[in-house]
Length: 196
Image (tube, rainbow, N blue to C red; front, side):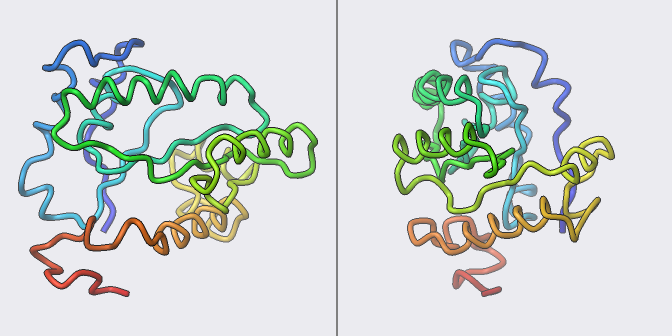
């Protein structure tokens, strides 16, 4: 079952990271009550493409893992990574959970351009095996899905963009260092992966 939960309107109002204010950092955590946590097997939080703001901060506070996208062929995106990771470490001082990086994702990738291939090499050199094998290709279907305010799987299920995200999901499911029972709803699946 998939359903929208929290509105982003409240959490994206500030352009600055709010880790200096514990009340701001822990705001979203109070919204995810015990009932919510026991209802869903997984809670995925889609964050806006910026380095800061209360929504980003709150998302890191309540997460076990995060995926870090680095836009293909965008050197500025790579240069901002260290700043972002420093911010994550600062946020962890207020967080009960210590979010770990699940992997690095390269979206908007166009393997036909030299710039994209050069950027891909830089990212792999910096992060090694943390980089997902899956690349999210640059695709008009993803742009159309955004305009339709739908996921690629809902708007264009047979598109290359939808295919890439399915491959990414499958790759995550195979990660040996993230066993299913870390995410599994223990109450509903007490023995781990009941849906293998």
